[in-house]
Image (cartoon, rainbow, N blue to C red; front, side, top):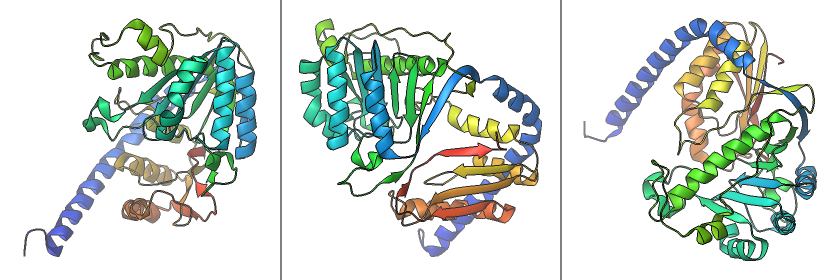
Length: 368
């Protein structure tokens, strides 16, 4: 047998599968122990006092984004992975510029890759003519060892009271406007209430840490930055102070559990923990329905779903087909490799046929 030959490859894969099965078995045994403690903690973590509107159509979402921006009185904090320069993006750019000229504190935090066209064409103009603070998240200058980290959130926070969030970037493809090579099947929500202030505080934390990473001689670990004069920093990123917000507001009866993750700065996995909390809080024999594009689950998630099936829960997952996948065939190969145990346990895997690209990340757990 030659090193690196087919037999060697088969042996390595078999070893990986065996180790994965052991990890899954160990994890599955823990869920019964965690159920009472974690489900109670999960249910007590929700914040009261919200109203929620859901937008499933991209054109309607664009109208709501522009309407919410126009209504801003004190601040607009926007963070996004995709920020393009097509027609719908330009509408948002013009709306942000107008509000900034009216005295509203406008900041934009965009991924350096997903927003590269935006930065190249508009950052100087928006800073000089509109006085908007703009920050690139994780450009190559931060270090090539960080290249795997992307800013994937999509948040627009208005006055610390209104939050627009979901899976849609700022581009015609998400707003369902021609011309576009593809349309995304996704949804966003408008949430009014305390959670908007909670996310504003997370945005400010990420923005400040990103400024320190961006400093030529800054030190993000000590919080000291000594690279640029204050006037230059304020021209680039906006004033050193941010708008305040109030958590003690009440807009309705909906309860919301906010979760935020930025793996470049913190290694916690609160989003996965919320999926786990929702599973553990679901009643035996209830129904779980999950949208999960690019579905390549890790061992702990596989173990959680197998545990749910053992408790009689009916689990259905909708993920991408070849036709509705924009991430290439490698993701589908990874999915096939990972889902065998789930299918054997009775988890139903359904492939979204399109024609839109499946992009929703959401679920309904036990009808709650």
